[in-house]
Image 1 (spheres, rainbow, N blue to C red):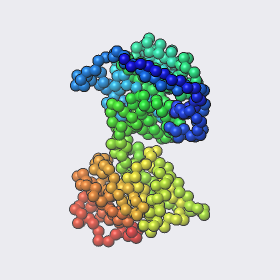
Image 2: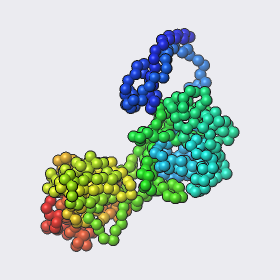
Image 3: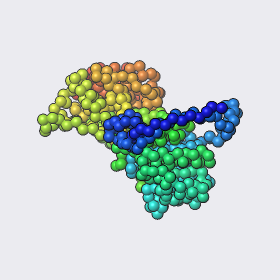
Image 4: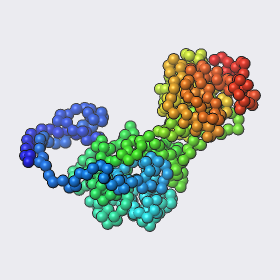
Length: 485
């Protein structure tokens, strides 16, 4: 049997207040989370070197094909978009960390999830550390989340929370939030590194031992990352990020880590007065239907994980009254927008250097994918010459500094979604494959060719022959004023 040996050496100890990283000397920047000014002295620590002897096993190892997998089957939450992100539902014994900005709708979604589990015959325990039980009850009435088997308590002590779990014996636990609960056995203020690690560890032990699905709410920092020790994300089984603009109805749930399912799925919700409602087809929130076409508006298809979403880009170009023209964006990456404007001016001779340029998306969606570059370029060109684009046209492609249009992933999936919503023409990069039946693909190798393709589409719309063979509807000469490209 191996012996246990221990060596001790007293030395100063320093710890990061954000992620819990420890070091023996003070540094200005954390070596783990790279935060400045968060490393503080935590007292004199002892360095130990320990060798542990072998102990009797609690459960013998078995061949992998004999392991019972029924205990790990996911149980649907009866909220379609949440089940999509989780990979089918909540696995008994799994611990899920949900993070998001204040007011985005985390508590509302989890309250509805607990109510649905209670209506399905289970027992749910909702622990609120930020609101009183009466305040949570008012929200439950508003979002229709009242259920007889949904138990509610307001506790901030870890011992009291564990006592409530023993008394209720739930199938689902929701803790809102982990930063508000503290243990009397551990020093430190609630929300600190030590307290968060202790609370999370206790809940994880209970969840695994009793096979209880547990959902924990976590706060986020100013840069959007999860507050508290980084070890918290490693300990839990699933990490979900809840995203959305405060003044927008759209809410997105994105899986960052998932031991039981995919991490490339996105759930879409509509945040209305009656709570959060699943959006199986959210593209309608990002499009504007008009009786008369307006210049400066172009539709693209973005991929959120595996999910194609149609989004509309709007642009406005006006004469500037300032020495330095304005460049304002909303929902778009400002640096990529500046690059696209430079490409239009240099490669396409579009004179916008003395013009104010405004660009935004519809419905509060954020387009960070390079595949939306071509739609932004076409929208700005349309706004500059004040000519509307052909209806039922989309543009997909990444724009390079040389003006070339590069291929993007999932073109066939994007075109299928656009065709389903009634779009008939698409400007795509070269070698994008065979388009689905019912939509015409116009390949363009650079931005100038894309704008010339727009001119041909204008001719097709004017002739009202969108379904004729190509040799019939392609004009001999481009139409004004797109012929400058």
